[in-house]
Length: 464
Image 1 (cartoon, rainbow, N blue to C red):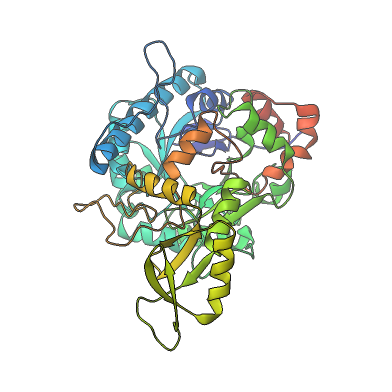
Image 2 (tube, one colour):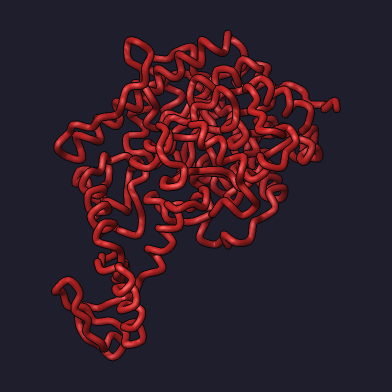
């Protein structure tokens, strides 16, 4: 099949309208992003705790030595800068001057602005643009402009972009390379689902993107590309979007499919697991310490979090008409609803003896081993987020959110680092878009076929 897909000018260069989506913590790396650019598209390096190399080209282990969270936070920032620079250089070499290389930043990463500065200062001429989401990156345009680099905010609504433009981006309009619309229901990783939207009822992206384009046209941005991200598997399903005058210039971002290539740095067991997924195997949930919804594989890790949150009751430190029954747990007195006593006793009988307080005046019940693990992870926090509900770390003068650490969440740095480096796919957080189950049914991957990046891009160009 021949598919009509014209090149498009992005950041002043003619490229294929195909972008490799950024996947954090050592997944969007130079080994795969460079070949994506070499194939004529836009490769993306994640600037979130990227792997750096020693003098022999081996990946260096991130070994945190700092005694305080602030010291470990500074180490994390330095690891991210050094690692991203190494990955950009590798991607640049592999791209052979073709396509473009962007970096991707989670705006809610602790030290995000320091990392962007540190990378762009030392990769001049190699990084074409900075893509940024998970939050409202008001300073993104200003940061990119210091290095004459294009920027690409990630939004999930036209309203969000309007706010960014009005407060900040209007002053840096010449470097706005494109606007990424990320579907808040179907994209992998952290999603921009608002409190007004039902996580169980996906919205049609077309009217939402059309609304974004209408806002952009009013701002004089009618020819600035919109990048459709989340839920994009093949192009034939989006043929009505291509050369659509109503939508204007559209580029497509692929985040999930590039996971399964020969150059992809994920483990073979992870790639095998992708081949085995079925519809419904990805869960949109809000366990992340960022506070955002995110999409990940349903596995033992997610199952434990679901169970941990289900074993939860409200309590009061004083008796009241509602909290009228006293329970003594670990020699501490709690007042709970009389209707909850039997539930608590059942959990305790099942081995969940430890009660842990949450910021919401509730108790969760976990095993002694899990309680110890949670406490250790909270103590070992490396300050990887601007605000972390799990550890109560914040990237501010007090290094604290001022709230109680929340044991219903988890250490995201620990688990993402582990799964990125041959760790268990079953017992770690494994981000994925909701189309990941299609690896098993797409004939392109028949008999366990794993393509090269070039073969994948060629396949996408046919429409399939």
